[in-house]
Length: 102
Image (cartoon, rainbow, N blue to C red; front, side, top):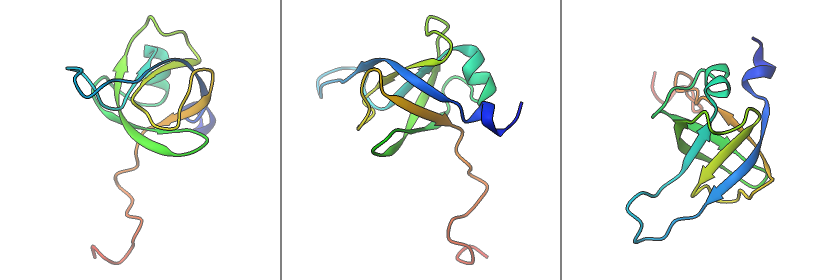
């Protein structure tokens, strides 16, 4: 499994936008277990969802009702149904501002 497999583009098959009164809200990405495993993601962790206009951290939900190659999104700004996104594991080991934490 190379870098290409972990960074493959997914089609947004469903999108839910919540209201302030909804009990469950916030950015979420639903993935098939094969897609999650390929990206080294597990249920409940955070992942980057990178769309054409912006990127956002979202909670991963592993859901085998989602077709392979697709994803479902909730409250991810800038995304829309049939749009294309990349879902990747955050690189928490690399500091973007080198030298500040040395």
